[in-house]
Figure 1 (cartoon, rainbow, N blue to C red):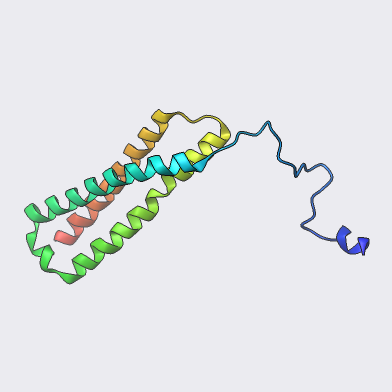
Figure 2: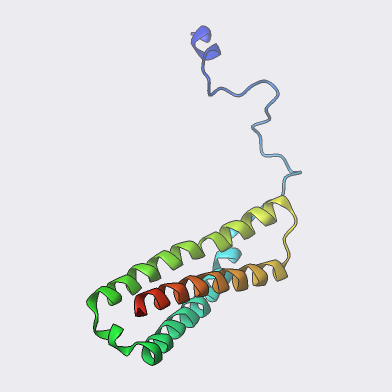
Length: 128
């Protein structure tokens, strides 16, 4: 029976420490998630406002196009899925021990700018 365990590729090697060591930083994701969920409200408000204002002034006929409405809904879901990278990056940064709150703000602004540019590109292409 011991012979079977010796050939197990998933068994820890002797040098691995499987215990929970105290020298590794602990990361509590609950406050990270709560803070980013508050920022999600701003994120969605900015993107929705930007899309609606652009559509109203540049090509209002898009509001009556069912394909456009569907594409906006799919785009909204995709941008909110991309939003999850913010808390994930912050969690890893805190785990590695080099995170500061200003990095969260910078990451949020960079992500909002990136998705805003993608939205603008989509709206320009779609308005043609």
